[in-house]
View 1 (cartoon, helix red, strand yellow):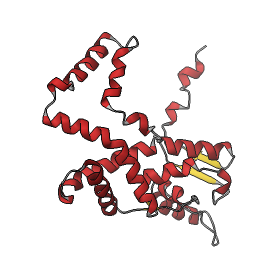
View 2 (tube, rainbow, N blue to C red; view 1 turned 30 degrees about the vertical axis):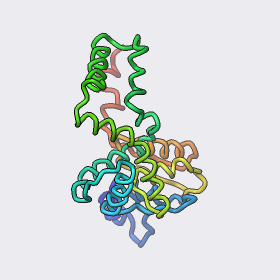
View 3 (cartoon, one colour; view 1 turned 60 degrees about the vertical axis):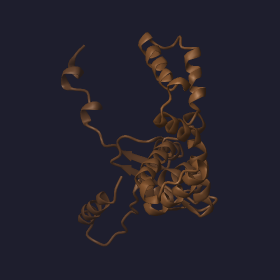
Length: 232
């Protein structure tokens, strides 16, 4: 997950040998994704560049006149959301559905509890045309433009050979061929909760016989207690 573990591992590895040895290559999970040879090479852009590129798309798609200073904090949050979306391989065309399309949930709600049905009904009543406020109008207007903003932002970055982490990692898994990975064996150490792109990468390398895993978990989850072992 990070570079720090590699420094300590090198120290202990050196203690095990009486002569010089080649150390393994240490990569963070993000660096590992960048080693994959994409059809169109992408470089992870710095945060300022990402926000400035998103700002151009945002202004073009919304027609708003916000200054870059006013947009900057909002832009960072939006990029963070896009990053999570891509790292979890979310179907954005479904995620960024128009609020009016979401209203179809209320037409067939037999799978919902009475409390859930009431919550959804309350939500849509709050966004009904008769009860819209300026804040609601801005929310709905922005939400309806979110998918074009997401798509155009990615296109704009791709044309410049740039990406944010999640975008690059999603691109890798969409093009992934295990035979194009640069190393013959990978050892994954210290991971716990995985996102979808990490899970897919790990599974692909595991199935190809190219990966070993040392998981970060408590032995009590995998080792039966003495009492359990002695029970009939």
